[in-house]
Length: 393
Image (tube, rainbow, N blue to C red; front, side, top):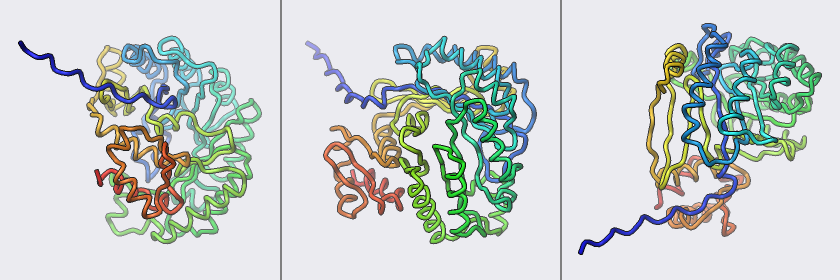
């Protein structure tokens, strides 16, 4: 008599923070492309209403894959510059999210905007649409560095934008900074951090400039132009920026993100805790779970073709199945970025316990029994730490 094969083992239960859902909406239009940007961006004006309808059509098509989930805890409008999208269109997308997958009563709803493009009318429109958080692409408070980065705004525009947002009650503001460009000093990087503190914004993201191959900076680097500070100076800048923000009460909770207590980014926290996210729009990425693994998708990047496909009921996408082993490695990669560390279940300990023990011996990790945390020394070489942990299986 044929024997029934054993059922595959049940995957370990997910931590509560991973059993949440976020929605990401990509709006690809920018008034100009920055020389360091490799995101899905067009400088050709979009039909805002048509793009709205396409995003909502995609949302309704994808919602069937996200049934039996709790309501979304975040909606994040990224880009591009979604701050240039008609606020009424944003509001329609927010309403559609609530009608399809559901929206938690206290959901974080974020819009990315450029300081020089924030108007009183947009601020009022965002507030009316239900937006409650703004991520400002400040990058620097030094006009010469803004010019180097190809930014259209100047430092004075930042203060005007924040004032306009606060006048309508949008005080949940994140300031994005970039450090590490050639010619920048440690004192200037510290000055940017101090200026961010002075705005009173409760959240600051600070990123090292990276040179991507398919950008103008990538082209210039291949031609021999020096665009980045040297490695030792980069490390010194990061440490000095961190110390400045921490001294001002804006505490790091992830490698590139700092906040006053209670103002940590909900949406980005979903990525780091390996929760699901429903990606919508041209070039958007999404992730959903399945038994023993999951699936990721990437939408086509061309805005017009994206709209044509979504409105015709066709999802122009690339889908990748992700097995349990890959998901486990990615949990290590994202989880160790957080100051709170990575919750460790039996599966992770079996897979990576040996590598983690080696990293603990080097002083790069601590092991609290149920959580691995990168030490300050480990955070300084986090890529090496992750390799140490996942490669020693």
